[in-house]
Image: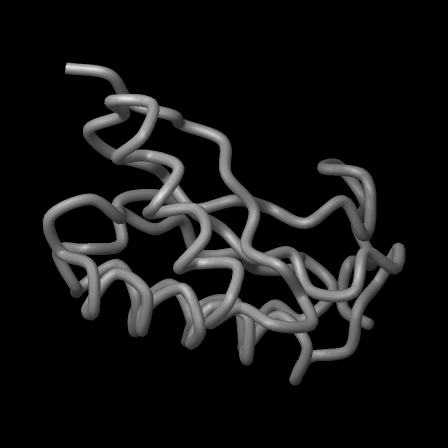
Length: 113
């Protein structure tokens, strides 16, 4: 089994990008991809940016259950919301992992934005 474990969905047109990715997987005999959507790549994206990205990934997982598995992004700058996202997406079997956004250092005592 061949797995591409680091795939990012396009921020602008996830639907088109997902179609291109799944077609490329078929051409290249890739059995499964692990997908995340980082948002707009700013240092500390706004809450809606990464929440929407997680939703888009979940939709990709649900529409391509045979090939796509997802990682949910959370930002330590939004502690409560990160816990909500974690609870929401880790309960779904298609989301298999969590990625911490680089908005602050891991030992930052004031990570709340």
